[in-house]
Length: 251
Image 1: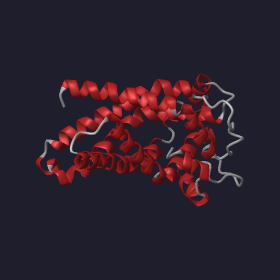
Image 2 (image 1 turned 90 degrees about the vertical axis):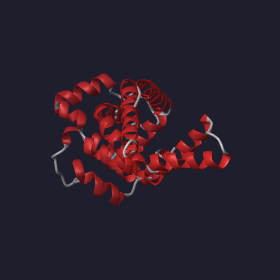
Image 3 (image 1 turned 90 degrees about the horizontal axis):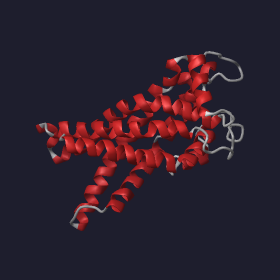
């Protein structure tokens, strides 16, 4: 990848990610509270829907920039090889590039996501207070609670979204005989993202509950046997994600 393309991916990816995260933040708060094990209204309902926004503002640009730089660099490297340069291998290239991009981006995304979601589910606390509480109770590793579950959510999401996005762009461009306009690429991205979000909603519910579990992990009680770690996944699948949470994530 040339220097110009690297800088373009860094700035455009980071700027786009920041705009999306901040613009749709209220919807993200509602989604988090719908997925919370304590219930929507106990988690804050429609009050303080911008709780946790400083965490999102700080992390969204470097997170999105890390993803798109990794994605474009990986596509460039894989495209240079003979086996993966063929047109029929393009979906595999996009899947591998997106998966690697998510693994790298999650190193930045998860700490900000933990603080953000805990603040969203506890609107009486500020982002700074939640950060200090997490570090005091769980240490730095508390900021990476849910890293594996986030990666397990993001990789299937990207495996669906990016090959579908690239395919739709190629198909539409071929049918109209010229490169897509920006709004057309956005429509393709919106459709691909909605499909991927719908498919991975159960994994997103599990990820949210793991991040919200805090230091109570390990307290296996009769009232709440699915409070900790990987137990959230079968518990969430058994319950089924709430209808509005299923709708909120694709939106």
